Length: 435
Ligand code: DLL
Image 1 (cartoon, rainbow, N blue to C red):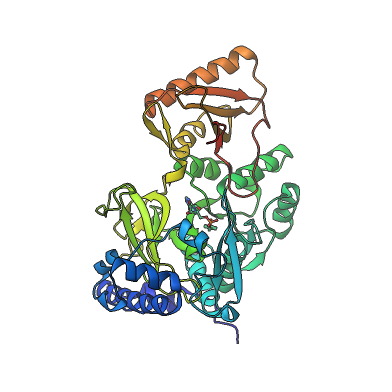
Image 2 (cartoon, rainbow, N blue to C red; image 1 turned 60 degrees about the vertical axis):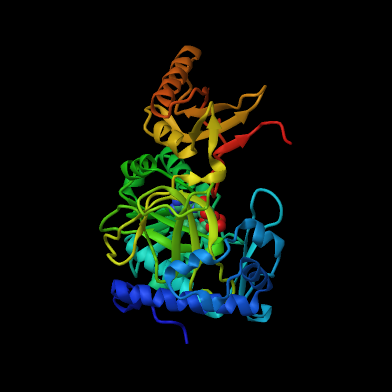
């Protein structure tokens, strides 16, 4: 029997009072802690080393007594060592490539896939996707969770899902024109490439059927949202997730309030820590997001250090659940340029608001001597002569200095001069000598 379609009216977790939510979180935390201690050798060893036993978890705050996990933990237990059920009960396996070393592997039981589809459906509904929509999914199908994960959620909601995946931009545009999707999902950077292509072949994106876009899988800014919304008849909403937490469906922006990502606290326990001291930071202050999955069966994970920098904010559209502020970036994407911390999102805010520039950029890091240099590579919409290009570069250099407070080089390239991605954009090109 297929599971019933998702509708928020029958979504119990959204109806719990705050007291009920906290009580359920604690129940679920105690359950998952016992499960991993019994079934995952890594957790048993790590708990014993930290001198903590599952029975010690008597309140939600006791989560802080548990050891952290991170990508390193997953690599050490590659490929299936973190599974909390026998491998034969794992119905699907995904992996995230990572830039170095072994991929991190995640597994799902039937129940995980079922509740994951409900969570993604909840996110899509929050963002304005509705049953009956033709839903164009540009998420990459394969080991990446953004293809099949989003797909399952859109089906659960009752959409007609087009599993087109990323790439072959010409065909994307053709299918959008022919199938008439009302909603879609993509990485924001790839969707900008699709928009460019549409405009280049004389299709006005505003005249298409598209009204709702769900974007995520990479950091993006309000400037990008404005760029997408001004070039289309769409509203653009944010969605956050990570493979280690089951993929997409961890947090999503609400169509009503458009003010950050509601974190589904009935399934995830969130902490924000100072990434250098590991101490908790109060709600409202920025730090590294640490997540515990409360309901996963195959691959539950405790106190996972996501490396994502954000803030926890009070609930609005969903009053019992807190929001995550738009993700600033990852701790490993932080560049330190002449003593100033710089994130690609800060550069994005500047580039995306400049007239005459394409919405693409890269941050190239070099180190000729002791100092790290950042060259921001930008692309113009039309070919600019030498002098005009120099003046664009000077203008951006000046704005980066004024707004971010550091000195950079700026390289201006002709149209098409920056690589396009069909999934997550590569914002940082590290050309510093290795080792
Ligand atoms: O990107 C899952 C996903 C698919 C989320 C589709 C949303 C939509 P991973 O490939 O494991 O999983 O990458 C997870 O991507 O830790 C963040 O650094 C980044 N990320 C994901 N969503 C957002 C977002 C998927 N909305 C990593 N804003 C995360 C900023 C995001 N960063």
